[in-house]
Image (tube, rainbow, N blue to C red; front, side, top):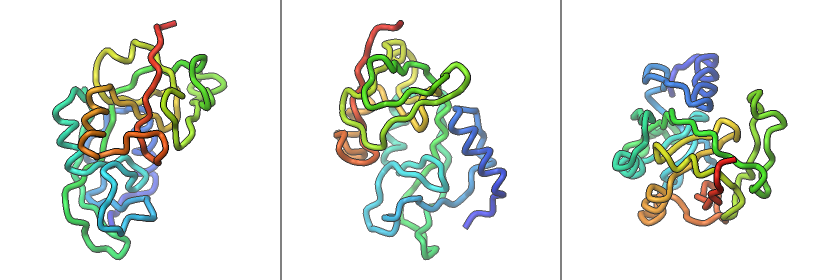
Length: 190
């Protein structure tokens, strides 16, 4: 397994959550899925590895055909628990685009941070239903993939990118499965 200092990994995780421009050096050359199902034959196409976002080659290919802005993909080998290598290509995902568009007033089942201007982040449930999260129409400008710094573990896809990922069965398209894409409500800016 990789030989990365714990402090280096913690800084990398924090930088990635904040959309910081991270170069390839701190990314380990190997990854191990955080999922207990990591040894099954069919891996998910989007998953957590070493506590970082990771994607299959198929997702990476779709992302390359859309506007992902400054977001970067870093290749790494994916290991099973027993140390054997999974077949296929995998990438760490460094999402460097941030958009503040979360609208707590029009969202349901989402807990906003007590003071988002001070860096407090809101929380979404792990499994979302469609139309529970509202975003302002401002987010429709610019890249198709982004994080919202006011929501913890938020990952947003614009319509065409989301539709392609769902159509190619690279990510579930309903709000009833973990890691699913849930449709957002788009409201006018405040």
